Length: 252
Length: 270
Image (cartoon, rainbow over the protein chains, first blue to last red):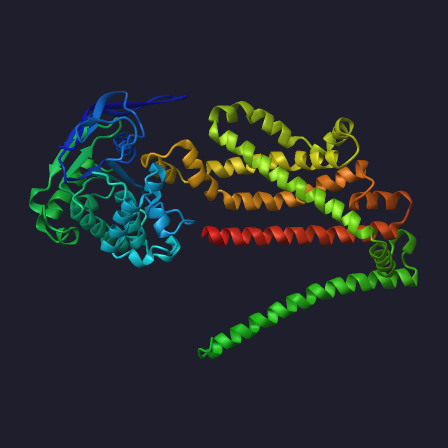
């Protein structure tokens, strides 16, 4: 077990009153699992992610990562923002070593690890290029390597692919998925795209409307081990999609 | 560029080139027409050259100023005051904006003061500065500062606040402290805003300098204009205004070039 949330509650205070965001979340995630969190828009998905990232503190309940309770941002948890979030004024190398620089650990050994990551994923020749010279998919890879450079066990993907157009999104999500699998990381993806969740996840956590609770957890046994793009052709894909769609109860 | 060019492309290129030439021609033509017309009207007696001056008289004044070396003194003083004023205004403005970004509480406390100071016509403060600091360069530069500082603070502060929240979040998950967030993200991301502030401040600083020189100075282009009008040497006034226009335009172009270089360095395409 790597992540454990127990009774996590959070209510936002604002001049207009209290806004309950999370009404008690209990969840256990195993090492190496790929989890997606889906739910109605504005239901508190991002709040949940922020709490696991250590950016927000719950009013009550505990979050532990790797058996240790969480206090603030931790190096065992890596975060991937919605857009790639690369700094345009830094080279690719400057971007992927950003985490090391901030931690004050820009040492030759750590740099060597980053260099290996870059060459393993075909980016070694682009180290001195600026982000603007790379395609959307390559930029996303760089963003992942920037996160991996700090050696996290758990990756948080915040709508990580939603800024891309549909074709690119399919390719990039499959790409990122295979890297995460190869590096044997645990991942939590927050998304509003049900088909994306079904194509990538081992389990899908469905949240209720705000204040969010876990409505249902889907375990995608039939689809485990099948690569994302092939899953979309699998008979079970439709079934899960439809089941989640029904539960989500989307109204126009 | 030895690729074969399609006829349509060639036609488009030549049309574009003709258009660019026409624009340039008209730009020069307007200038020539204006000065030639002015000169002719003055010579024909349609306008009084004593009051309106004329290009030939201005040229004589200009060469006179050039020969006596006065030109360099006055231009030097004004340009110097402007440069000091706008660099100081930008630097202090960025510093204050940084403090406001740092402390949300402070920025809330100071908000009404900034609004009032921004609305106040700063030239009204000129006489106060002169009384406080004496009639000299100090008062003029303070005047310039007063004009450019508040605008810079407000522009830079809003620039700082526009920093991508996702990127700030990313840095926080990497364990960045507030100081690191500022130096590694907020400040570099706001360099284009700063270049923009610099550009605005050049213009504002000229206003401050000329205004200040009107009030106190014995040197500088503002002084020449006021002096010329007091002794009814309109040739001197007109010449100085033209020199001022050239100096201000050159400085503006310089900052524009700096801004472009900065944006290129930042990888920002605008």
